[in-house]
Image (cartoon, rainbow, N blue to C red; front, side, top):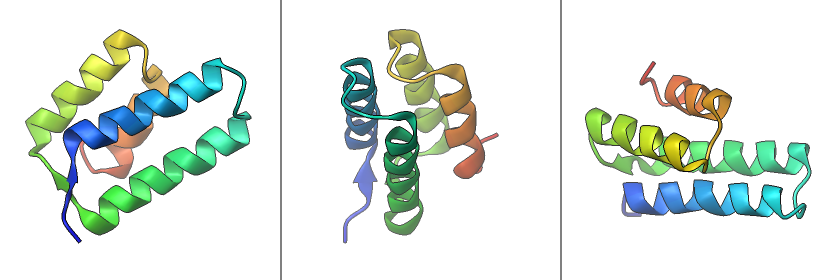
Length: 81
């Protein structure tokens, strides 16, 4: 399978946040989906370099798509921290 694009991953994060904000997801469901998205990244690889990933996560944080703790978690799981 082809690597995951950075744009696709950020859109997944934004969708998760929207579903949480709308009350469609419980925290446990959010955590499970986030873990699945990260696992998919680790298996299929991300089609971007480290600086691009860091910048995209920072922009997602600024837009409110992720929280600081989610950003830190993703960075740690992807080996960026």
